[in-house]
Length: 205
Ligand SMILES: C[S@@+](CC[C@H](N)C(=O)[O-])C[C@H]1O[C@@H](n2cnc3c(N)ncnc32)[C@H](O)[C@@H]1O
Image 1 (cartoon, helix red, strand yellow):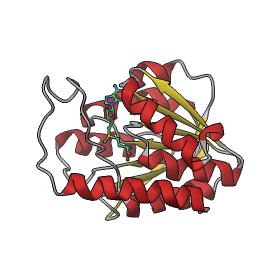
Image 2 (cartoon, helix red, strand yellow):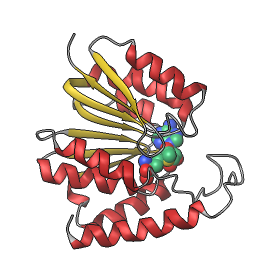
Image 3 (cartoon, helix red, strand yellow):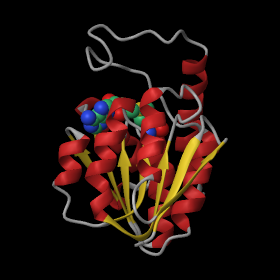
């Protein structure tokens, strides 16, 4: 990691620490209402892990579902730059995506990222590229519809990482785990990294 990236990660780590020590209240209007300011970031252990995985691929197209304020995207964009690939990151809220873009500029990584704003399920369907790496980290009831949308676009050897399998866990992520394991060509395991990751690899069956 170069200095500019380290400095940006330090800013995020302070924000993550502050968030950890403040009560987890729903913003006015529910999870998508008002201006939800929570990062809900994957955290440094998962950040490092997805960076290691994505860096091991050659010129990968990396898809991130749930940009939020851009923390996990910094780790993925660094991997994209190191491996000659590209990050496409999707977020429903423009104010979150705009913040993420500013931080990516600060880190010197913005040229390696395409920021897309809107509903991820629809935007995945409209993607022209095929995909080598996916981070699934948006609202949990969207894990399954997203899987159905990105699965036909995976290249052989693609890696898929889904967050929050163990914490908070729950029915939505359990259903995602069952569904991805039932897909042809998928090998998959849950790892106790961060909040628990379903790590899957796709090979044509
Ligand atoms: C858990 S946060 C992502 C955290 C981020 N990966 C990180 O580690 O910094 C989930 C994000 O998914 C976004 N989201 C929820 N539904 C979405 C949808 N249909 N399309 C795109 N983004 C969505 C939310 O607005 C929220 O910012």
